Amino acid sequence: MTIPPTIASTPWGQAPEGPVTRFTLTNASGNTVAILSYGAIVQSVKIDGKEMTLGFDSLEGYLGVNPGYGATIGRYANRIGGAAFTLNGTRYEVDANEGKNQLHGGTEGFNSRVWDAEPFSRDTEAGVTLRLVSQDGDMGYPGELRVRVTYTWSDDNALRIDYAATTDQDTVVNLTNHTYFKLGEAETVLDYILQVDADRFIPVNDEQIPTGEILPVTETPFDFRSPKRVGEDIDADHPQVQAAGGFDHSLAISHYDGSLREVALVMDPHSGNQLRCWTTEPAVQVFTTNFPTGKYKMRGDAPTPRYGGICLETQHFPDSPNHDAFPTTVLKVGETFNSTTIFRFE
Ligand code: BGC
Image 1 (cartoon, rainbow, N blue to C red):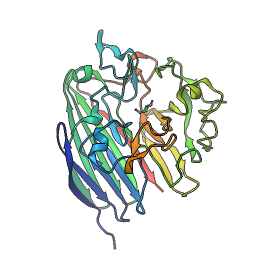
Image 2: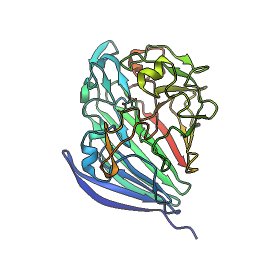
Image 3: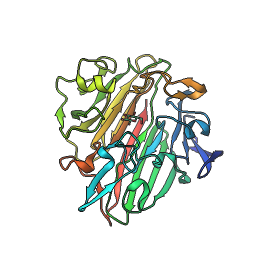
Image 4: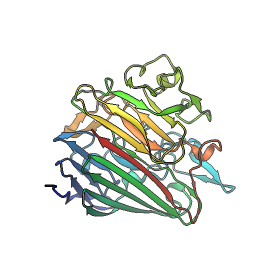
């Protein structure tokens, strides 16, 4: 007998912009995903009752200082150098929130907005569609952007994320999800085995802004084409990992063609749990939670350990609006931005 998926909606506190709802999606195996209308955040993924993400158990944590746990990041995920770009001959200055650069959409990125949310269910899946209108000039970006993020949780423990956006003036868009995965009890992800189908990476300067090069991963710490322990090269004598204190780099998917493809696999040898990732995006920002232990807190008010989680941020290259050689992030009037990422827990 198949048990239909269920959705529970719970009031989850008050953000400055308004009340927040949490949607708990339960599949036929009893595994759950919880989504917040605040930040379109993935607040929790539980498989066999075990939490698979870093995050908080109340809204206060998300309203306070945190490194974007589970959040939907936009209008432009990752960095924009000098917090400025030129589009159609006009220079746009966007909100600088990391020195003179912009990170993750600025001070009031999409991760700190209250989204309209609508749950749905079908035969073997349950989901939530979240909608946000980002005004013309929001954080400095041109055009009113209408964004839709749909989370679908299916009976095979796959969390599918579909993004769509339209604009009334040409603009730039780069959307991602910033979930920190933690697949078992181990304190860090250093023993996890990672495989990424990426043959090049995007080197960055000392402010983590792309130099403009796209370099082969061959004989660098960024070569995850064959499964490799995350900790193996995390402190390698390579200027890019040394500067970032670990992995915090955009890996360019091999033979990118925009189709939905399996691009990454993470395996925790201690728990035996693994995570498989598919995306239509040209890159994955692999981020190994390089912050010093205790810089941020997480569930239970515990200090987040250095290397305590791993993010697979499927997205375009950082700072693309300033690099003509990178795949374009321009969204024109009349076009629809579409992208899909799937995280399947195995
Ligand atoms: C960035 C990191 C940043 C983290 C938290 C990641 O996407 O690449 O540099 O520290 O997000 O904002």
